[in-house]
Amino acid sequence: MTPSTPAPRDTGRRSRDGSPARRRPVTVFLLLALGLGWAALTVPVVIGAPVESFLLAMTFVALLGSALLVTRLADGPGAVRRLLGRAFAWRFGAARWAVVLLGIPVLTLALAAVTGTLRAPPAGWAAEAGWYLFTTLVVGALVLNLWEETAWGGFLQSRLTARHGLVVAALLTGLPFAGIHLPLYLAEGWSGETARDLVLLFLLVPVYRYLLGMHLLDTGGSVLAIGVQHASWNAAGSLGAVEGEWQVMVAVVLLTLLMALERHVRGRDARPLGRAAERRAAAGWISRRGPAPGTADDGRG
Image (cartoon, rainbow, N blue to C red; front, top):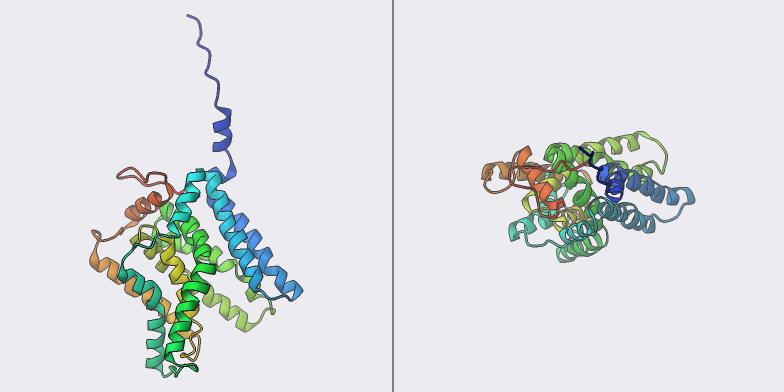
């Protein structure tokens, strides 16, 4: 019997499958995002320049640029379109819109009222409300936070959720999410106040990422929902009607607890609950056609 000739190998496919971005998209993204992000935020500290333009560079180059590049290399051009499409997924219900837009400021004002730290805003309540909405929806969401969350939530946390589920993904996403801001915290040197602020940051961020993870699961992966929520937190922290900064941090924790309670009261028929369901849902946002029934994508870390 004449031995059969082995079929030639598809070296092109093997090369693509062997690329670092295809095998380890999360790792490659973190190397790019943190490397470029720390560089962008260190420059203004060293040269004494205003930080605003460098924040834009961090958002659009280090974060969004890295997320889109790695998505393209890992999953092809269609994956970039799917990821960007999630940034404009706005059909998630009036109740969800109320939560992401008003939940944190309402709780912040309520806490201020209960603790005696509420005051009449300098320009009046109508101006305060208008300022908040403009800062949240235009300056925050459209200019910065929507694109920042396309990277953190749409790319990183979604892939980690597809691999590990909601809780672990929130913890793992929180570390680089907080860590990329280190140059700003260390700009004025190390002190007890700096240490306290960093501890608070790293304690609060996993709770906050859990809140955003719940939004992702309950809206079918909408990056718009978490971008507005991110902008809302930032704007609520600068309300002129509140004396102090602690109220908004407590409001984030309260909103997270209330949402988690509401999700479990409504049960599994209403939204993905449990690690397996969370993984299947997140895998569907990433993959071309969604996961096969009863399976979950591994989220490739």
